[in-house]
Image (cartoon, rainbow, N blue to C red; front, side, top):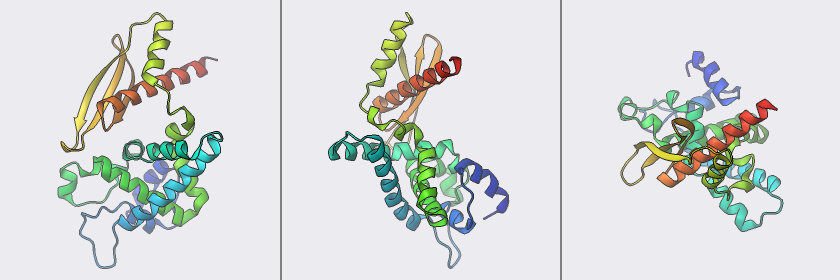
Length: 232
């Protein structure tokens, strides 16, 4: 790996590798023609999937003491889904660090949700191998904090809550708009914004328009909460 990029990607990940070769492998897409002895990130992705399940399962077990097995299982499947992982990967700009075939990059492969989710899992595995479970658990907590910090609120209807808050302030009813859609026809990916009048309150992404709008409402509520806490 080119060592000048180690610092910026370490800053994005919040973790500094003792063995940079693990990170290089985690960032290597299968499309790249490799020299003999080099590996792509598929094996790390396999391991990372298992590490992720354990990290999220532990977080849910500790933070939702009254939830039964079925509820915990449903929550975990939501928090480790492709959308959550790819959004976390985008926030860390992992796509810009991916090593892949030029043709794959030219077609936007480094920003495909499935590719980003796989890269996230591979990096998690690399961190686990490099620094142990504690380091891996800390990475998941940082990367997926918005999903697992208050997981038992997953059943909240964020769109209704947002509308009620705005109505209480005598503000206009929020409206939602799909601003982008990409991906193949059989697996589209949507970006939505929620507005109050001309003011954009939040933005969200999802596999469906409904999920994108839900995430936009959730982000709007989080931002409102953050602003309120700063004023107090």
